[in-house]
Image 1: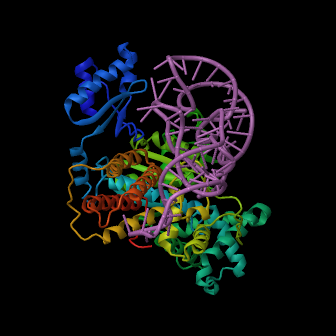
Image 2 (image 1 turned 60 degrees about the horizontal axis):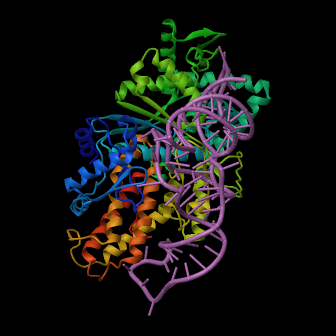
Image 3 (image 1 turned 45 degrees about the horizontal axis):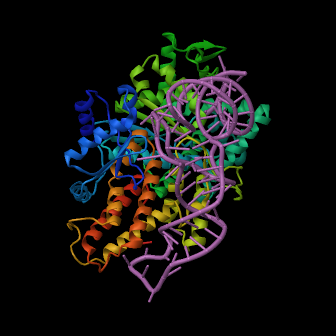
Length: 557
RNA sequence: GCACCUGUAGCUCAGCUGGAUAGAGCGCUGCCUUGCGGAGGCAGAGGUCGUAGGUUCGAAUCCUGCCAGGUGUACCA
């Protein structure tokens, strides 16, 4: 449609201009364009005159009904019923709304990034949900998506934790770890991390010991040591963290193709940084190896510290190279919290110096922090922050109050939707009560909307799947028109990596449906068949949309 | 200090590649209800779009200054 209008303009005014259609308020029409307003300046003409002559052409084409010019020069029009009928036909396929924007593209998405030996906090939950939704969108657009995860199994935080572990055990006694109950392991390690961090800051001797221990842990990897007492403590602890992460991911429905531990990327990063130092990309400074960001408007960061150990920066260089070599991706999307925005710019700028193509294809997208809405008290033995599991428990508590159950389908639907309905970037205020709420813009509301539609379909007797009609009535038409927006919304959400657009749309769609449903009987109505077909398409779109967000759409609730 | 992000209704947020009376949910007022899942529908109150300028026929949207909050800023991740 946009191209056809563009052609009409070409033949009228001999100007090549792209036309963008928008979806105006339903009272104006199905589609609108402000192209006449844009052309007014260039043509030195009154925008209403331009709009009138374009509208004249559109009317003559016979493909639209109700072509009108309104306001300062908007052209509004409605599509003909044959167009609507064929749109309804196309909704019969299960992948209605799918685009091909990422056909033949290899895309690697990296998100979640929890560190072994540390707690899995709410931010990891949030970033996992975002990463899943974005991966799903790209995949649905034809992309060959590889979801990967990255985490620090070596580094100072590990030194701190292991130090506190040996203090707790009274020495390097790996066999004593068996005394920690299985369901408390993760929390037990997280508590050790807190102790280790405090000791590092407050106790000079402990700090020195931790620095030595940190080096030893790198050495465990270099030597592939599984025998020494320290190594056994280390590997056991790492396994505990991995088990915990995997159980959590399984519960929330996330799965990764690969987990890159920093112990794997560190040697590659270190070697690369040292090699590129010879070529002048990185340089020595005060015993460390740095990249000077100031020439690029960034700041300087340390890639190898004076202990000779690679910092997070070098490990990220190693990760980037490893991903590049293993996948040769067309696009790499890295999703993290926004606290490392500037940091990542420096890392990518340094990589750009010797692997420009890799840097060019890498997109770092960031989100804010998860905060609890006011009034909800958090208690955690190991610190004043929100753990991933706390989010799950609080939402389950609220769901129990309202729906009388703690089922994962509604609870996860509630949390994921609450995380995704806002634009990615600013902090998200998580309100557990509102998230599980059955009214308003919530996950369970949409799940309910889907279940209700399915329940209506179950009551239909005739063959509604291929129903036809000569004319849609007003309610049917508004629902159908709203449904035709789905593909456009998915396309925009994919292009902009903005899942919240899907949320907004699904909610508006449900509202449109409720208006239709309020006024139109379906079962045992003369128009049962055609309305049933519309309800079927509606249920299908809700399900597709929710699934893209990583949310289940159960048939019953 | 510098850099980046954010500031829209009481609260939580859409809208931001400039365009039609600035939208939604929650909360608040009123109405609808013998009904296919009412977990709904209709109507209403509520807004100097942080602020001062600028660009434009037109600015919540673009530019600049300022104010407020957040984050980052050399050996943590």
